[in-house]
Length: 169
Image 1 (cartoon, one colour):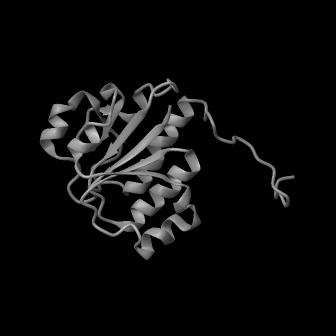
Image 2: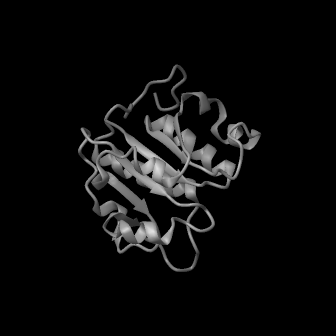
């Protein structure tokens, strides 16, 4: 199966572009829940994704309800929010036979409160101090997806590679 990074109504094209690059590097799906705060052909989005944009498996959803209708196993849906009591690293993502969905909220307002309350057991937090409102969305997505991949023993990814002009060989 696969890992999925899901962005609820993303606003900042550079964040989405950076997350798209992470998806291309990790063979993860990228789900974008509309409305988006930008056009997906925006030059900033493409610049952040560089030439990897065409390698991203991207799925668009018209609404949060539309996205939820595609989640077959809701117990493998994880809401990443600063309001959670559990940390993202305390969950078990090791089962590579399941799809794992990591849902991130809008940069300015996060996920809808009612939706979070309905899925409180699936809310996960990235530990941090209260000195900042939030971490950068693309950094959060990378942290969480690489924890899942670590637990999955980086299945399907190269853990070593030799380059023609390898600086370490």
